[in-house]
Length: 244
Length: 233
Image 1 (cartoon, each protein chain N blue to C red):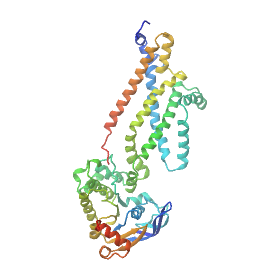
Image 2 (cartoon, each protein chain N blue to C red; image 1 turned 120 degrees about the horizontal axis):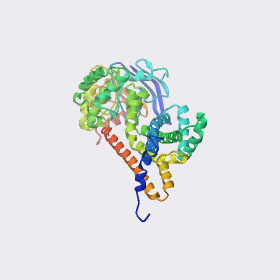
Image 3 (spheres, rainbow over the protein chains, first blue to last red; image 1 turned 30 degrees about the vertical axis):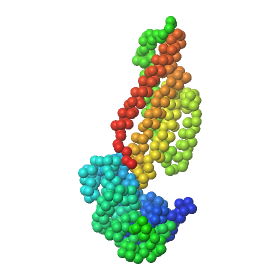
């Protein structure tokens, strides 16, 4: 579904992605973790070309993202994307946030788009907030609307870039539950997160990055019980018991 | 005149101040001032929008020439732009153009240039995440601009727009230099004829300008609250 082949990216002199080789299969749930500045957000943003890559090849759903001839807008509709800062449109209500792309791109009639959007809002448990503006919603609710928006184009893949990092602790659960529900539908998920509980329970595979390099790639059981790379051991120690 | 102001001169010439020789003759006074202002306002709203968008497009062949023209116009006194239009427009059009048209052209060009900077700043002031979110749902870049960025940017631009327009309303008084009989010109005429009431006349037109501008700011504040959605974050 997603295949990185020797992908490199630089920000000026900074080598943010260094020889990435990854393959995410259909229906797989992959969690990417690592310290801040490790390149994990950049990695996930290359998947829908919010960040272009400079070297190597990147295939999504069989199409070459690095090829100029690829219709990037069409391909982006196949990839739902959820941001750390939600990025809901503040001037539109929850339901209009969701229906904008289906109406403009898939040319759905307004009524049908709204019916589909309501189904999505129900799925994330926010059917009663359809006419609320983002500023009237809590962080957790905003992020759930953002997930519904990401699902509105019926994507094959969902990408999450630290979806819970900007949330109050007590709102993290509601978002993770929605994501877990998605994983159970068999959708391909790629998640950048520090929620190790989510990784342990939901992920099929954990990827650990630092310095723009994939240092470790393992099943969650193995990654948490027996991390091989020294940097990963340190990271896990810090994140699981930050006081020691 | 023995002490105090005598506003009788205003009352006797009130129709002339308000509408000039209209409807029997050409428009003048306040009516012409409003006409110049409203027409230039509409043109420069769209002109500023188009120029502003041209200043933010990726294509350097569009962006840099636009930025150059905008900076050129901004670096010239409005009075000179009016002179240019006065002498150039008939030459370019190949026939005589009414003075009011030259003033409208000058005001529109000048205000569009300033407006384009407001539009550009407004667009650049919207967080990048908004465009990214729109693009990630498969919207085309121009969809993202029209349906996501511009509606938010426009609302933020309203105060600056109003500022610019108020300043333009007052700048219509410069039309008097090319003989357009708007309010200031009419006031000068009446003053030249009556000779002894300059204080009354120029105080009166100052108040009229103030009322027009104040009404406009009030209207826009009302518009702003009506367009208000609660801002996120």
